[in-house]
Amino acid sequence: MKMTKDEACWIAKASGWLSGESRDFQEALLSRCHLRGFAEKEALFHEGDPCAGVHALVSGVLRIEFATPDRDYRIASVKQPVFWSGSGASMRRGAYFVTATAASPVTTLFLPHHEFERLVEDAGHCRAFARLSLEHYDEAQNVVGQLLIGDVEQRVAARLALLAEKSGGPQPPVIPVTQADLAEMCGLSRLTIQQVLNALEKRGFIKAGYRKITVLDAGALVGRAGVPDPATAGAIV
Image (cartoon, rainbow, N blue to C red; front, top):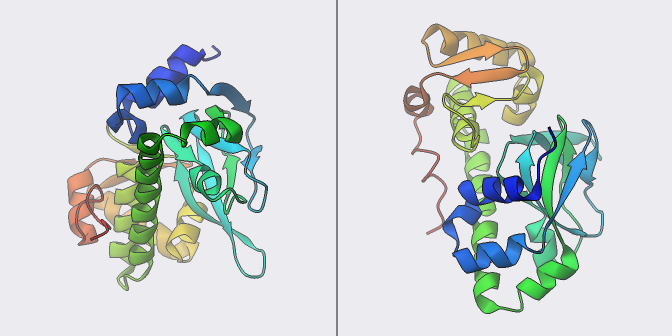
């Protein structure tokens, strides 16, 4: 069944960044958005494309990819509702600096750039988008810290804990990621990822399935990661 805009707006307000903003801002933003649909493997935008606007993922799964210096694209994360993308490019009035591709059929609420410009004429609205940018920065800072962890099981546990915390879905969290993608995200070989997942599964922390990992004990996973809870880790001080 096709999602209506009212349903999409309810999802956008129910969790994540927008849920913490004022009702006036929520209505001002969502009234300017319209629904867009994307087929599996279709790009919402590519790195280097001129900024067209901001997307709020309300159904489906996104792959976020970065280009290496030799232009080899690597997966950085998978995103589930509600995830906002493109705000940094709109704030800078520049190009997108990642590629966002639908890993399944996807629905977004799309805020065109000219409507974004109208919104940020209000200083309070501008501060709301600044808070979104800081959320993205905090997450990126957290991911970089994880890649510096030498213990591979600890590194994978930390990455899975963060993905679970950001999943925004039902409990227990289900992370829609393949072992190959997780290996790329953690900077490890697929064999190493397979060994680590087997070890975590034996301890009852996770259950690995086809193209997904179910987190059975998020607290134990955070404990194995040896880092603060993902909800508070990476905060800027």
